[in-house]
Length: 87
Image 1 (cartoon, rainbow, N blue to C red):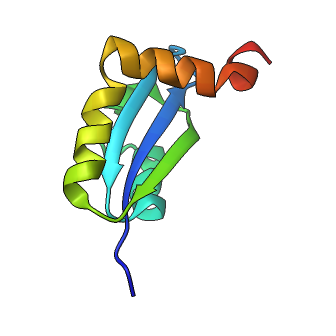
Image 2 (image 1 turned 120 degrees about the vertical axis):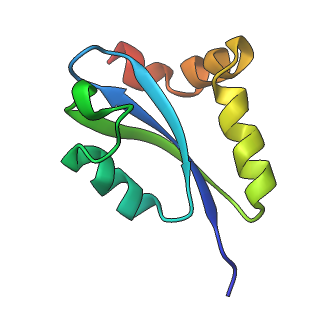
């Protein structure tokens, strides 16, 4: 059985900002965000999971997370999530 690594994007309903993260267990990690157990998003709740990608390699997932934090990564997400952002 393959082990997956997840890169995800959260959207804060409070401040309208985005947060990108990485986890080996997406469901568990999202629950931690929702419960306020993650310092970087605790004061930004409520949060919505709006995008995720699964990778079979941890290094690739971490590289992808860093990419999402760059100008080009943000533009990729803006284009990918155009319907969500304008709807």
